[in-house]
Image: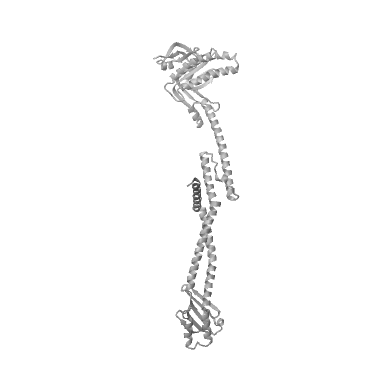
Length: 482
């Protein structure tokens, strides 16, 4: 079989399935049921008079067939043969082997004067006294009774006869069968033809439109670019065509609104990312999370943290002879290097004040080696300043002070808030820096006791610390070799 024939066969199968699909459609079933019921009612309306007309035709034919016999009996009564014994014999002879089964004869007073036959009629005299002809068709017994009044016959007697109508009953049964078959054929043909029209004009387009609606929902939910809709290609100048146009307009509008919403959401996400990044540059992530959740009066106590203060020596004098732009650029370069060291050692930068830099270890999440991390940071800061001087042909030096102790940390205020520290340990660390020596790292005794087994120190001895009195301090020289 060629490919062309296969495609043709598949096309025919597809059409057949489409028709079958239409028969299964609930809407088409309702329409077809209405059509079938209408046909049935119409056929019944047409059938009843047709049936009666056919039945009357057959009864008239039956009367015509018996007319000659009835006329003969009437002539016998006109010849005054009623009293003659030969009347009965003559009448029996006339009705023998005929469709007449029995006859009754009444005089004008209603007295039955004669009857003969084996199946007598049952019409009473009273029903025909004032009528020309009275007919009674008993379909249940296949009998047809007919009475002729005296006036109609022109004699002094009423004649009532019973005729055999079995052939008429059979004919009428056959007539009903033919009509029923015709109704069935017409109903099947009209129903099938109606279904084909419904499928082509209504059911199939509705089902295709339903598929379009489902596909549109899937396209929107899965963010696909689906444009192969039946309703886009269908051209109809009717109400269903208007529905398809409305569907396409709705789909385009929804897609445009979704696109605009995605663009807006992307802009919002970008702005949220910027805001998040900016917030994390100001506050630790855990503190930022608490603020976003609406928490107020954020403050926590920490039993042991290590604080580092660093100050650039001679920066104030340099600012007097350097342009503001160049000064800010130099300071930004130095502090950016320190920020990278903060990330490297997983420490928390607190703030910068002028040319001073403050960093702490052990919060907002406590850690056991905060002093070691700060010591590594301080040593790297000295190396970084030396590298900066070499790269920029400058001669900056820094003082670094370190202390370990308990603090309270939190956020206060509602505007331009920062994460800050409070406590004597903070003041002591600041004094370690301000009373230090350029290009050295001065630590308190508390920090020394933590680091003395891992790092090299030089005891500076007791010095007078503003606001603290005399204190033992040490200079951190480097790491011990093992």
